[in-house]
Image 1 (cartoon, rainbow, N blue to C red):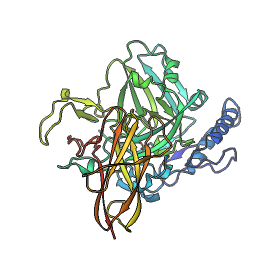
Image 2: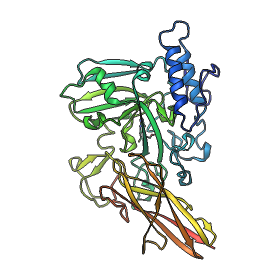
Image 3: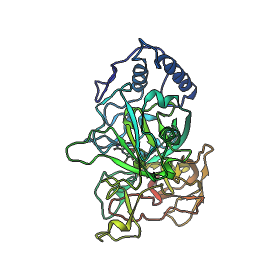
Length: 417
Ligand code: MTE
């Protein structure tokens, strides 16, 4: 039996040769080959029961992070694995897997056997079903390039400070996620008209009395043509840290909406009642002052991301030479599209348009750049994005007790010599 164990003693399979090069970059042709090979090899062929496991295990070995902090990632928590990308990594449209942030609320599953893995679908459905990984892999595949951002990204900048992981600017990344559409999977069970919300549960190991990481998503979003059960990321099977072997993907929504290590889907009549729906991941309906009491009914669950931008270079605190300097970064807007990014090199007194990169997709960030003629002195450089809904980044974030959705204009301080 092929078993993936946590920690460095992972992965027993180092053979087969049936796999294409599976690396962190895109490789969709190889992916198709891979699916063809494993479905012909592992489906119903007596005598090769572990080929599927071997294939997946081998695929994992190329892109896993074994030691938090490898690949230059910022370790925000050792207790569970919480890794932040340094902003200078936001210079490619797709974020390579080793540079993609990781957010875990609890320990990752210690054992993930792709052959034993099952996904159950129940609740408000005509016919509960249990699917194997091969069942998922045989369904039509859809790909979505999505910018995933943790709701708490930028929490460290709230004043007064708020509790929680002190994310700087890099709980963020963009990848091509692929897998069957959630609606195709739910069709197998048949959603009843009473089904209004869908609950997702992962295989995380729940320590002691801690409530499990369970959230629910309104049925309209779940049935959207771009909502997936992703089995692949940037053309390779999902790495363990990102939810191997399958995760939900709710494009344009806060990262918490995309449950990793998926094992159960339950259709519900109403929103799931649990810690990660309430009080977790909610935002006040009206602006609140620090210290002000907020009633639960005056809050709503977080859904789509805000319009936002980040400066990837030059990095905060750097020294550059006078003359032409390329200021560059990324901008995204959840379910909306970025239409404009403006740069100020004088602390917000005046703004100039940045050039938007050619690569774009509905839920993905847009890279941008601005050619700045830098003069000697200290400068404060700001970036500000606008989307097609007319939303503009505010100069300061809207304070809230959990420090969610900080989308204030970005700022770096640069010394020009
Ligand atoms: N799914 C499970 N099962 N457990 C988790 O802790 N964290 C969520 C989400 N899905 C989480 C989860 C949060 S808060 C975020 S921001 C994203 O996963 C992060 O996805 P990533 O680690 O692949 O970047």
